[in-house]
Length: 209
Length: 58
Image (cartoon, rainbow over all chains, first blue to last red; front, side):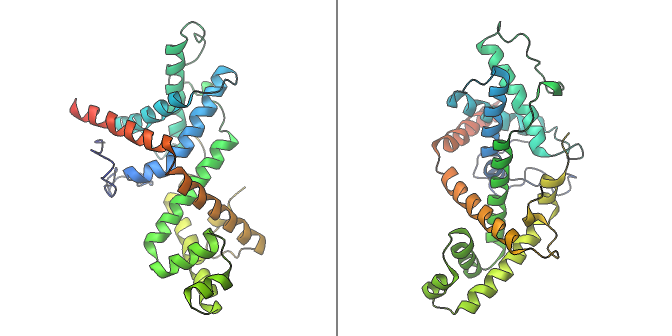
């Protein structure tokens, strides 16, 4: 898979339409979805391998950047084998182990490096799971924004995302309360339809490697 | 436990599930807004772009 030139290639698909992968990602989408989870993954894996040491922020950022580049360079993700996030955990684990070996080669002789050694991969942490879920929902909201009229999204954003009461939203927008309720109902239905598409379902439901 | 948002659209949601979905969406929205403003996010993007350019120049 060729590397994208810059992050400006927002709309360019990183995988072809004809590809069998279910997760069609763009450069921006990948960042939106996986930046938070990758940072949480890297921190959890670092703590796992160091007996709970606090990871240096700069080192984590470096690991995350390397993992992202590795992912696009290798192009070895097989959606038939499991979720993308699990594959990213394997890559992240390998990079953390590499980093620790470089930092303290003697103290970490026992670390099992390499992507094939699953036993060295710690279980997914609750922070990681939470971070991924939030990123996935944020992406879902962005998809919704692109697929419904602006006015409908504005009402949804006010009431559901910013917590403004339906009455206050109606007053601010100069519409009656029924318009607000009806719009929220329709938009929530659309949101659930988007959430039920294969790319979202696969990331939620597919078992790990 | 499955997030109720990812139930089939034809399945009816309880009031509690609706409330749970609303809360999670609001949290994700807020976190995402904050996340994109975080310095480490910008640094990582810059770092990745730099490495990509290096790879493409090889």
